[in-house]
Length: 402
Length: 224
Ligand SMILES: Nc1ncnc2c1ncn2[C@@H]1O[C@H](COP(=O)(O)OP(=O)(O)OP(=O)(O)O)[C@@H](O)[C@H]1O
Ligand SMILES: [Mg+2]
Image (cartoon, rainbow over all chains, first blue to last red; front, side, top):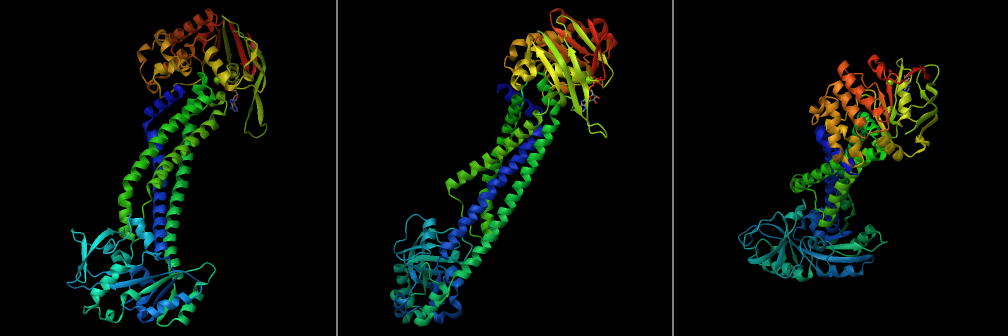
């Protein structure tokens, strides 16, 4: 073993170009493995978060909202155009069959006037019944949301004192969410009690006349519904439209699917590229190692003449391949790690894709994998090609010109 | 150390038009004497290299046996046969056989370092190189040597382990008259110390050192 390692090191030192070439191929392999995995997992994470946010099967909006109350507007922007569902309509929902969960949201648009710091969409959700916003918010911040607190989207700027004014009152910014690439980046989230308070102070202003006629505690901008397993979503939506007046129920499925499909396409695209690059690199590695071993037939024969066994030659070759592969794959990983931050930043900014970095465990797993896999591929190919050659008779190898 | 070849022959496949295979060496009985220099001559392509490669464990005979002290060397495992080659055979192959990643010293000490006692024989390697007139090349990488220097380096490598059997394929091929004398004196001294020396050569200058001469003709060995 000591001899194998020594001869391996001498080979690397005396043939630096050959070693560097192999090193670069392995580096490439480890870089693509890490980056491909990282991008796919991040996009998948982002998509999962997105799905959860879009996790309602049916959206019920006030029928007066008309064009404002589209699924897209409701789920991704929090807009229903200042129309509200009255309390008696809300109560009737309990009589509809097939509803597993439902939760009310109350939307308020801040006025662009001296009373408010910025014109944004404020989304009030009920922490008790909510199933769409909470999982996402919880993945961003640790604690829940308390009365008087707001959580703001990534695009909202706020003053250094950490509070924003709406309709004459100041609210404490508890957290800022990560960028999602949707209208929600420009939204403010808060709980039901807080938004009730905002609605009360808004009711007195000129901009929000419509609020005068409604009681915020008992009205809603929309109701998000999750349908029980086994029930047909459109049938439940139809049921609501038939039996409850002043509301419009729309299945959200088609939209979620089209969004998911868009992201799915990107993931597939990245997977295909990653697998493609991998296949090509593996083929290149196999070809290069095989060629190199061929070129070294005479060298092996000389070792045989001096008394080396086939096993000694194979272990010298694997030691050499191991040193080269580990160097290449570690450098590849380091480069990948350095590039992840700027890369995710530019993907968020340029493509507006939901992109959530994997957690530490998965990053660790990816790192180990993208070092071990190329390492194994390098060593195994080298050993196999060495085996193929040492299997020949030394007396025949000696005739090879080198 | 008693080396005996019993009816060894070697068949090769040829991708020609008519016969696909032929015997390059045909059923040879051979017993080199210890303490003697045995020379084998013969026309190019007559099977000399094939024959001596079989003798030293580098090429498996298609038929017959090669026995060393009563043991069939091709019945041994690859590891055992390799160790045997390392300990008992000094092989100077035809053509150039320097390892380019090693210096002259490392090349000469290769058979020693392989089984883990490199430092011990440095003095011996120095002395061998001195006798061959290339001790000044000790630290030089072997790809910077001339043909004759490489040849002498492989002679030193073959002798470093004091083998009982020395097999040399054209050991003086690239050498001038004076250097040929250096190499042949060295090999002759080894035979006088008890080694069986087998030399394949076309070189007339080698003949005076021969105790026994054989001629190879179309795979058949004849004593002269
Ligand atoms: N691997 C091989 N496959 C097929 N034929 C071979 C192979 N090696 C050698 N031969 C043939 O076997 C015959 C003997 O070859 P060998 O090298 O033993 O001759 P030689 O006597 O050493 O010649 P030279 O004096 O030129 O070195 C030649 O005709 C050669 O073409
Ligand atoms: Mg020959």
